[in-house]
Length: 399
Image (tube, rainbow, N blue to C red):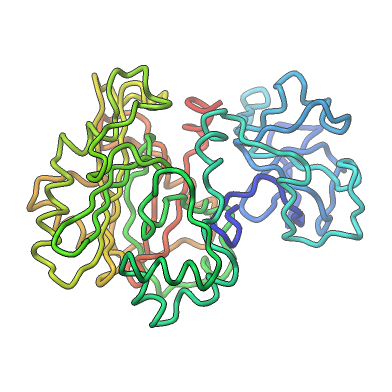
């Protein structure tokens, strides 16, 4: 679940919404928290019980007595597939524990309280821990309350204006190479964590695209007087910028022998595209293109590639904001830049999350193999998007 700062929480207080039988099992049943289904012992929980929910992809500290029982899996919480003698198929996603079992006073916590830091929960994948370590917000609360005011937004367009605003609000810029200040990093919410109001909304329609298992790539540009500043970035790190004009090592992907993010930019001339885009849109102060770099050595799913490839999924600037998928595709097609495969447009959400997760299952349009899942973006409000991941994919590639 993403918190208000857009950072993923791996443990939080939840309420049991339903308890249902699992076909073929005499001793276990399914407990539902939000849109997640978790296998528990019969009688372990009742509807309405308050509990701690640990999301998949998390790792618990097995040196703590309350988590010692997870020693065999080194504390890792993942999607697990059960068949119960071939009579039924059940995916359990997450772990449920009572607050008292975690050494917490249940009376002091309410549903929705986050416990990730308090319980010392981290990502199961070390690469994710390194990648997410830089997710701390750059701006303080005082600035966040004022950043949408017209005068502040106008001043933030300019280098001198940002310095003045930062000084006024006491913002401390990051010491590392400056990541483009205007870029919103990608981290889609999972459909299981959406509020009921989203499922009840039958007026909104969505573009549904394939979710590719790769690494987020951002190419950004900013107008600096008569020149442009350009960046090529991973999700958190600037790997090249036009000021220093030096490519950093591949970092986590150094073993590939090349920087996959720079390779993507060079392969499809993404910096050249953004430069032409700015030339054609004289009023635009900044813009960025985001997509997925994938293939050999990037994730376990190589898509049958020798080397890497790229598909775009977002185009944003300060005038048009986030383009709809269809509008973005129209622009990028003219430059020969491929986009993530589209599955359907004008899609209305089903009544339940389970139906959407079932829809996530299917063949990838890239190589015909298993696809990771789907991403849904509102056609009315392109800034709102979320994902549904196929649990079969998680078991096979992230188990």
